[in-house]
Image (cartoon, rainbow, N blue to C red; front, top):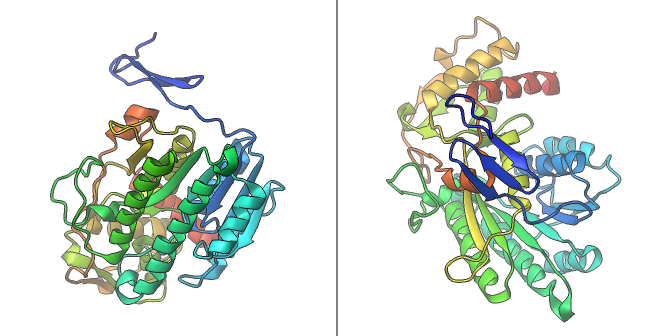
Length: 376
């Protein structure tokens, strides 16, 4: 055992991790991805495409079956751009369709018999859920139900069935929670948007199915994911588009908001780690777990905008003499928004020896460089 001063040294030893700072050894993985068939929903989405790419490049996967409905909630060209790299792999199969189509989901399970399911397909966006609630019920509720039912019946007639269901939840479930940082042990009974309510419902559905049918399931509460080729409805991307057009950007709650921005590469590492470890039975004997995946460092929105504009200038997306102050407007809080998001990631660190750590400046720098290349 080697200690380097007061620096925590964490190393992986086969399927375990040794944390020398804490002087403890903890199990990391109990599930092998090698040679497995993995079903990824939302495969052309921001997170889904990056998960698929990482698995195809770094893991010896038998097959990834990806599904996406390719809807026009935002620019479909971005989805096609993400998908183009994935379909170049021989062990990637793409299915265009909706998880709300029960017959299609059942056919996929019957034909490919996935070993692991990663459900990332969902209608995203807090504000959009206020004006278009039907989309959230269809995808986030009915669609997830179809996934759970297919997982349930994968064990029929003594079949091995699904070994692990991993699904996306959201930091939005914390709603009006006043305690920070947000812990998965906190009660989350006060959602402030339909989107948040559907994500909390996903967790409840998964718990019920894990209890009734012994489906190992893990939910992941993502905190403000950003990065290259991300979602244009997210602030960093939307602000960039507007500034480039000379439009005014609106900063909500007069800038008095904080967000726990989490870079996409950290999200990918967290998800792949989680895929390899099915939950131990909890106190009620249910193989069910929920983790936060966030940077554990909330950033003030005004600071975020300041860093973004600096990196856009450095990447030559915007000219050095751009008048940012003339294009900013401080406005009240919008319905469905919260003042702060802040992830407690102790459980993630304890179980996997991993904590997201990409700085906001580094993440926005990579986004700005990508934006310059993609749109030029």
